[in-house]
Length: 276
Ligand code: HPA
Image 1 (cartoon, rainbow, N blue to C red):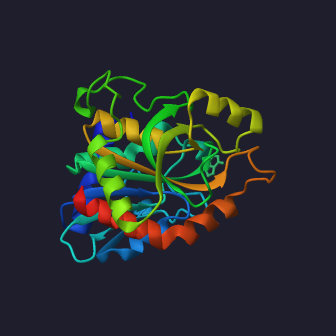
Image 2 (cartoon, helix red, strand yellow; image 1 turned 45 degrees about the vertical axis):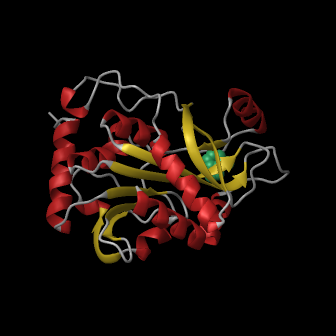
């Protein structure tokens, strides 16, 4: 019999802790093209995912597949950064997709920053904009909490009325204003992917209240909520969603936008984390 999710998270957490030899204050998950943030850390320890017990492998271009732990420059804040995440569309179960979040929880991490690349559904968004996630709509239609319940993971029916911390959103807006960075706010809608959406689907999503669309983040945020972690969510709008502009969408363009805004994104995220 395979071990329980709780046991797998404990095993991964123990392994990571032994390798990094320090506590972690904040965990960060980096989306497509946003991997550069990990390079800004000091005194880094690097743990490839393939070495961590039960971790899946990153199969997507633009996701390095390693955990980078270090301190934020000029602070003593210890940050564990996932340079690449696991997605449902890669064929992983949501247990596998969210194991890293469970492992961070088992390590005692209470603060989480989830980032992603997303398509802009809201007509006022431009490629290159950063969007604070105020809430999500789970159009993946799957919950990572489905299955036999284990009280050690959290509640059976966790509340989802504040998945993305109000306090972290306030901090993010303050920092963006100070930095003169345009930071919009909106609803992230998740789909299974991996195909991009049709124009008709995007029109539907807009009617349903979506501002941005992507293929990640929501399962991680739900698990984090169940574990009582406080979560910040930031989307980089890499492209106008399907049908808004008369142009096809491709993964290279998504990653290219990540590289273009990288410096601004790293600076903003660093300053937000300092105040989390
Ligand atoms: N749709 C879904 N996911 C995405 C997109 C998109 O347009 N851009 C980046 N990730």
